[in-house]
Image (cartoon, rainbow, N blue to C red; front, side, top):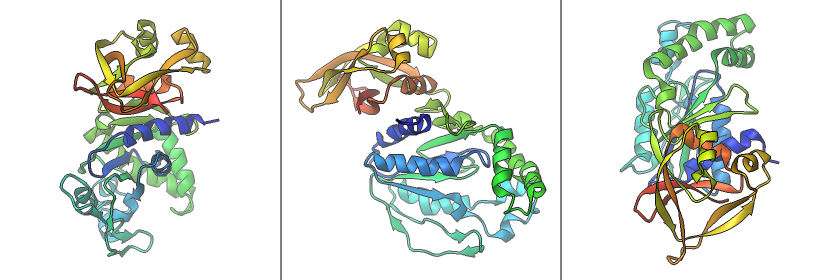
Length: 335
């Protein structure tokens, strides 16, 4: 049986793989120090690859500044960590620009070996056109340009416990690790939250306080985003909308061409209770212009799209489609 964490990560992976910009998709996994960014980035890369899309993972550890630059304001300096830890200019030039619009898709995987503090001059890697590149690191929205940003939202007290436990040996003992997180790492993270507001500008927000049961808080855009969601089933029902979105939604009739409607039996008791039935419609792509599915194009916030992702069972995956009206919209298709 799929775990709650795998289910949420699968929804994010569906969201990323649905996007085909004609070049690599550049995805940041952002958050405070010890939020769980690296673990999530690795899992998300694997989930994207499992869906048949080219995927690669990079860590900003490979784009640190040399130690002399990182520590020039003092080993315990929060300002030094915030401004001097990473070589963002090189990362933009060597990774994000080549994978962005008009780029040649040849990017570097690292420029430094962090443990030995040794510069590395490796040949670039050529990315396939459909690559999803997932990058984890700190302060990723301070200067860099991304296509998607996943913000890993973890409370400071939880991240502090994780980080000090993880880095006790590396930092020379538990007391030293606690001091480093309080005075340097998390002090810098608080400055980042205050100055940049990274959770508000991220396109995906994931609550990661309980790693086994993460919470998908927003997906599809920043905090003020409004997106189109095409529904041909129970999400058109006012009672379902009120239960999951807290309001009835604005919508207009539309049609999904090239898809034929079928039916699926739902076994999730919560979904059956809210919808009032265990028999739900589901659509499958045929490509036949004679096939069409009628429904409603709903306007939803990114937080409401996350709620819809949780409502829909695993028989469905979310995809981006062109409707009969010419509008682009998200829709839940047969998985």
